[in-house]
Length: 197
Image (cartoon, rainbow, N blue to C red; front, side, top):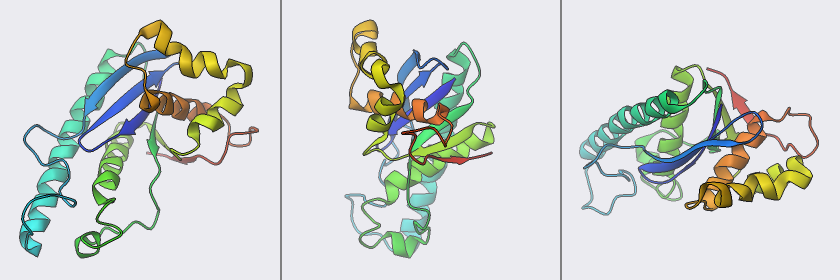
């Protein structure tokens, strides 16, 4: 089973597909516990001093680790086979982790999103799952090239077969699972990044 994830602040769409690209599960998963700010860096509250800001980020990240672990464990328990990989939207390799830097533009607007992806990757690796990174802008078109004549059936068919919701997030997550299954040298495969546990 391959899981593709399209994340948001505090939650994500997770689509699980078989080796034949059949959707076996789709669900919303929670990435942070209730009552915890979903965006600690890009928050709308009053300005915080460095110590308070550091404590807030640490509290939200710890909550995200617990919530994400619980969500992925619940997903894994519901599937008919083991998860082999999780696909996440890529983030820059050189994205800073210094909190003082993260508080400034241009990082402040992206720091929370990157945190959720990093937490998802950490939780997945801890379970022995491969982590694939994808480019959200073109993963669906890459998957369509790989699928060729089956693209419409595979990427849009679940909407008719499963009913709503089947949104752009669902298609992107499914496309990411397709790209995770493609050998890197295959035509149209692009250059996905795979990290091992």
